[in-house]
Length: 394
Ligand SMILES: [Zn+2]
Image 1 (cartoon, rainbow, N blue to C red):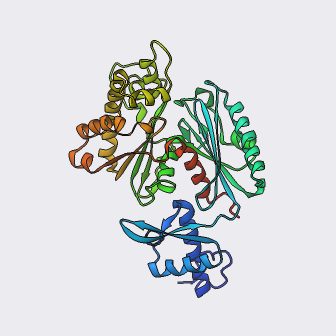
Image 2: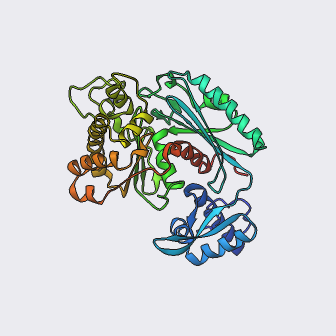
Image 3: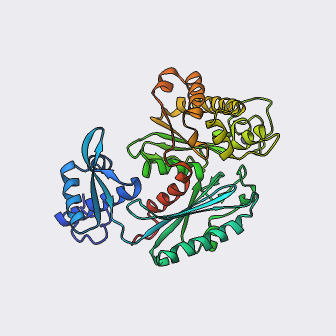
């Protein structure tokens, strides 16, 4: 068989030589650190498929020239070495658009946040106006930190709605009806950078396995409980995007047959009984309440708030049971603005999960609150940029 059937890697004149192999292995380490975030040496060996001795040599060489940084850490109670890419001045931008907010993070190759801004948006804002608003805020953030636009690798954007990845368009069912029909090119034209975008729950899941404490988990479900309810899936170590890119729409699982009409056009969806909008409506009959009020009132023991959260949590747990039965994840992470509630919300979700899942699956599934809080989606959007091979890397 001819030895040159495979295209030569760039810069490798003799693909069988020691230096070409070293170069390939270094590239594999860099790609893995961009895709998974900082990892211990042992985990880096597992994820690259290289031996621990090879990884150790590569890390030493790359640390000596300053392209990799290491720091001592502990993993499963043992001493380990955490490896991350050095900050070379390049930044990935993550933008999270919500129903009432906009958050921008600037992230380095080593998964550190260089800058972050949060802005409240009026309810029912027009998509184009919000994108322009983000563009101006981003320009100001770059200027303030003296970051040249050429150092921006690209912009990741999270949107609370289903995105058809075949056409690059926000489709019906979005919590932001004003965003339906928005196309990837609209974002690129107004943001003036290459853009990658995804549903916010998918980005939350990506953040948990890149920024979060779950870098070593292969199967994870991230559930965002907000004005809508959606799940992002990591299967076999990779984000799962289905055939259209629209997955994890658990907010539209039917919970009650003849329930309230949902904005998706169906009736009795999980979202119509357990979203934060429903909680705000139930608890706001005398005076309007916000999600922050719900968290505060629950923590101070308000009976009505606790009852509403208990009912919502049980319904969400029931919805999650069918996902757990289907994919048997190691971890289910709960995110969104109620993440600060801790066990107040986790307990009823766990009850619903255990009641409706196959016992062995329900008991083996770890259920936790997101430690990334409201930032998960924006951080995940930055991760999407770092692991997109199509975008330029300096
Ligand atoms: Zn629905």
